[in-house]
Image 1 (cartoon, rainbow, N blue to C red):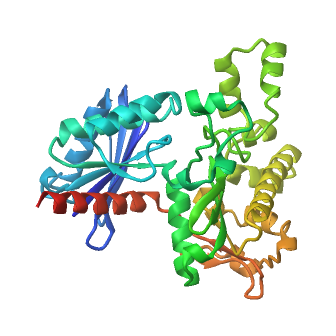
Image 2 (image 1 turned 45 degrees about the horizontal axis):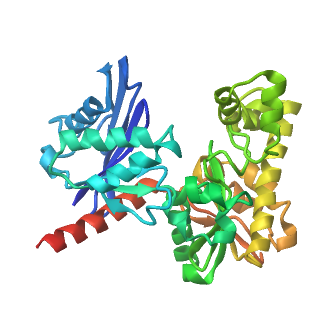
Length: 405
């Protein structure tokens, strides 16, 4: 089976084509600036030169058609025709309470995703455009959706409910949902496999640290608590997002600065975090470079950022009554030895003994960054959300095919 994995944004579309016989990637790429006359398509077939083109792509249906054409192109393609695409798997950010696991796309599933537009207005409508675009181009190919929130549906009520009037939960489903669930699920399973221990036997904290960032407490193999909330704004300080703050800050600032709801929402999501404190960048690489040059604001931003990661790890260790393993993943978590060191050196009370040599190692493999004597083992585990989506799609479509026999 060949599975095409798609992550559709409002003006972009990323893709990877997998051969599920050995889970190898045949090609990957992205379409950028959808809706403009200068859209950019970047196609990266394995074993062949990268292909890049600029043309007019006004909507997602054309973008998907362009992707299929590139995959089946006689020179730069990796399949003979689109008939070799057996299934398509989509990333969908918000599944609400309706979806506790990945599902085959049906009319009922599409209707429910639309109902959730209010909870993820920046993401779910774009994902739906991707689903409909594939439907138009590959009408007979089964599609699946894998939800960022599904892994966290195992959280107990004391973790996901907010201490506000219950009527708001009953009427509007105001609660903690959590995100990055596909990544947290993937790296926790990889870590357990690396440790040669059942996931269910471990108390684990996974730290997905990228431009968006979240920590998850995993107990008995399930999400026990997670830092992101009803939206991806809550929790850790991020590249441009504020993370946790006193809710009273919002009406106070709106009143003092005469801001609208839309403006304050933009401030908290797009103009806060590392960007706001450093006054320089939302990119951790640029922040650490500036620290080396003596930039005090960059140092403050870094210290605030790592402090909040440590605080969540400490809180989750307390919530689970202990922790066996901590995992760093995603762009910053996997690549910033400076960040990992700053976090771990503030957690020695847990029995963490950082190994400087291991921490500074550059590798794409799962690895320890603590000493063998460390009471809590800390790992770096490269995430691969696309592979998990491909696996779920393969399993679901295989089950569908068997049911139709």
